[in-house]
Image (cartoon, rainbow, N blue to C red; front, side, top):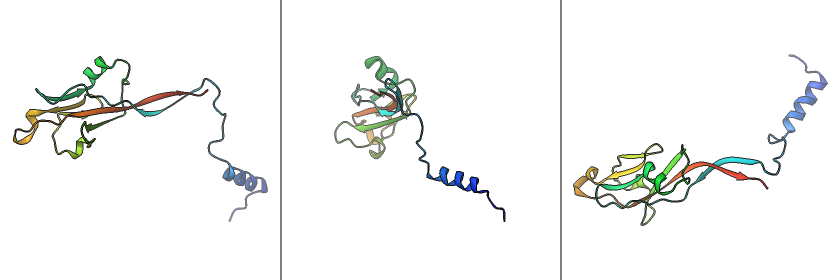
Length: 129
């Protein structure tokens, strides 16, 4: 069994008692990045080909509101806020690269896509005053 010198014991005790968040506090004007949800977007209705809430067209209609590389996407029905994955419908795209695309032709028994809205999780910048 090895013995720790007294200074080693004191250092270990000190480190064990330290708070992990010790550091320099943010100063005025500092920007903290974290992830935030965008607003909900509903640019298309399910008539015609289906409900196309694709990123390319959303960015055209809402310039500067959706980040370049979203981390996450959520889609829910406009009526009832039912998560898309709980509707039993098939989706052509449901990802952060293309957005959300529900095609009427992909639905069984001649049914049409529901009306969906989407939002994206992006880095948000929060200034510290």
